Image 1 (cartoon, rainbow, N blue to C red):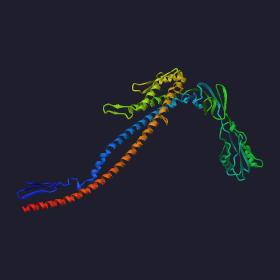
Image 2: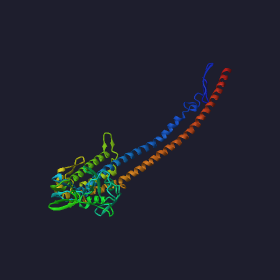
Image 3: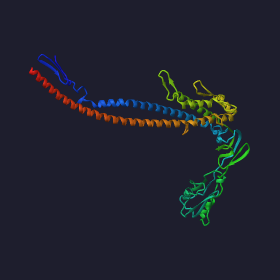
Image 4: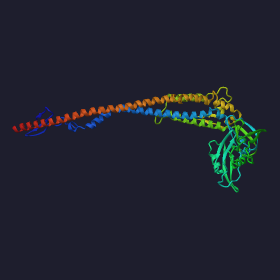
Length: 474
């Protein structure tokens, strides 16, 4: 057995026969030479080089986005809480009054914060009325006469130039359309005796009564119309007349304000009634209820953000976050303290107590009794200088203001996310360059392998011929 080697060719001779595999595997192992899978190799190399940095960018991005979402949720809960604190810290919430009439047929009432509690005897003698006067009857479309017609209310007047062909209908239109109308409505009433011009003051009260006159040189017809409309009748203007605890009051309007501080009477009928003004505690109890609900929602949000599940070993997105812990600590500090100098002193004494899970509950009976017996102390407990709403709202401003902690944290996170996005873009660009370099290198290698394989084939053929020649000479 003879073995010939030197260029990767192995020949085995047995007797006169021979089996040869010249150049077997010479530069032609799988995937080398013209059969090289360049794209697959490049993809694998690029993916391997890109995987680590890309995973790091992705992990940091996911973590920052989760933090941003958590801070946004915390900010939303704190803003909702502050909205309710705004109501509890406003003096208007504690100075809301209700006025009621024992005899509701007399009308309705409304109040302002400067109303004072009390009970009064109200008597409405008569209501305010608007002046109404009618002309004589005219045939439809008949002319009244030429001249100037002046309609006045107080110190305001309008002058109408009436032509010889104008009827009371055209005069009515001119009155209603005049830009200088002092407060008179004109209407045509077609009665049994003909058409009549009806003038009515647009406002009630003696001060809003009108007068009508014809200018010098006006026709007899127009002067007659003016005289008729200027003659008092049965529907003259009058002021409302009433008394409050025997004190006489008059008003040009049936909406009587100013007679009793902070109370407006909207009268619709005459008669007597008891008028009762009392504090409307529904505004306070509603504000307290809103605060408790918003606080409990805040507690729920904080619980989710800082939670930890031992079975899955997953924590909330703000678990251990210093900002969240600072909020919790400061909120608890305010609500667990007392209000110095206040006779009620604490939320618990007002019926607002903390449950085992950290939420609040409100006892409406305790709150109602405090509002009945000492409304001023309740107001001071929330809206005073050292009140809970005042202090808590001021403290939360440090977190929720446009330049507060939450906004600063969020801006920082967004800046980091922007940097990570830029890093991702840069990484993609580098990998594209890397892939281009690899493609150039492997393409050159592939070309070289193809050339070497051609050379190998030539050498193999030559060697084979030599071996065949040697074999035949023997």
